[in-house]
Image (cartoon, rainbow, N blue to C red; front, side):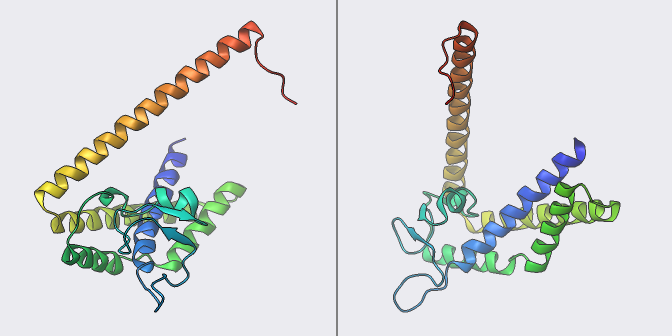
Length: 188
């Protein structure tokens, strides 16, 4: 169980770092204004900050974005450029992502070795350190008011998550009561 939680943390860190790289990679535009290789459309401004994404990426593109914490924050053009520079400088290495995929596949197949476990731990630690470094660098660019707004947004997201969890729990309890009473619909 402990190894599983460590690997999940490593995977989450890898997703975070990958999301940072994706935000930076999506900034290159061709003459038509559309991002090169763009598979989704952005709602709102063309700068990519604070806007949700729709289309082929779907929820994956929206929820995994590295800039999610900056959604709804008014950034100056200078701040946007600084943050893009930070993201570019901390872009993850594709070879490391592929190595992590291989390790995760070995874990799913049940063929993971001790060396792979240790390497996964190293990669997870590196990803966590890089994420903390990026976070500190981005926070250094922000004003105190922007930081306060980010914290307020985080608390609001946390509250919505808790409300969803409570609604889910209520629905589950209602379902179990119906099931005990024999009132549930048969599955076709």
